[in-house]
Length: 356
Image (cartoon, helix red, strand yellow):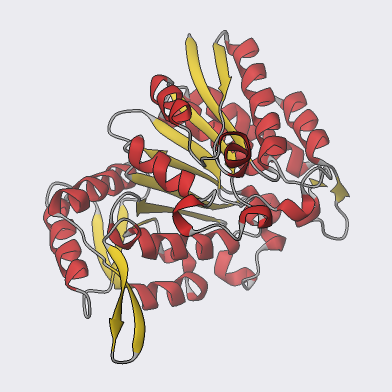
């Protein structure tokens, strides 16, 4: 089979970790008889430097023509002085909107080999963790009306949280479909005791649940959900929530697994198209030093194989290769503990390739 992959390395450590993911995909192609055609595109700070825009139109056009998008990371202190809509991070919102990526999947998976890196007590994570956060990605406060106005207390700024029924319904369906393939528990997180948008959210999610009688639906306020993630994380299977709440909770969930450097993500459109990226940022302080953990990017490539390209066997091979490397005691600097062995970015790629 042949696939076109739009590759956006981005800024900071983005190019380094993306390079290793591409190497792994090419090797998967050799082993399983597939051909991946990669087209490198600009977005983020490097695009600003080259074109004056964080998201050039050519990037959007090429990404739409691909079978999937593999993204590194964007941003850095070099561009911190720019206004909000011109910053490198604006490219992410632009890509999500232009590509119709409404569902963000962020698995918080604690590898058995890394349980010692989890900051929680061992009894809370005994047997491992496997939580999937399904975050609505193109609505809510990040895309609502915003502005400033004069008040009797000075200049005020506002951002409006708004959701339509169909926006909630499609993300709820995604969450329930994912739960059907897992442990059949959905926890919908909102703030329905305060927010009108959350009351609509809760009503629509409840309506969708009627079509999935095998799935248990729980509702939870966001403040309680944040507490429960560190108090009793194993109660969760699939968490579905709005854009802002999902942004915060998925980062919290990622850290209880030991390292943000191990966590991939997928952003899906209607159908099989998706954009895949590691959860971590551009980490400019370690860029070019062979210290960046490429495993989240490589696991993102595995998610791409599974969700967009329908290659589950190949995705399993990548995940098993990473487990094999970890089982031998090899660790990136962000996971290094007593008794383990350190490896760099390229060496991690080499070792994973050797296990495929």
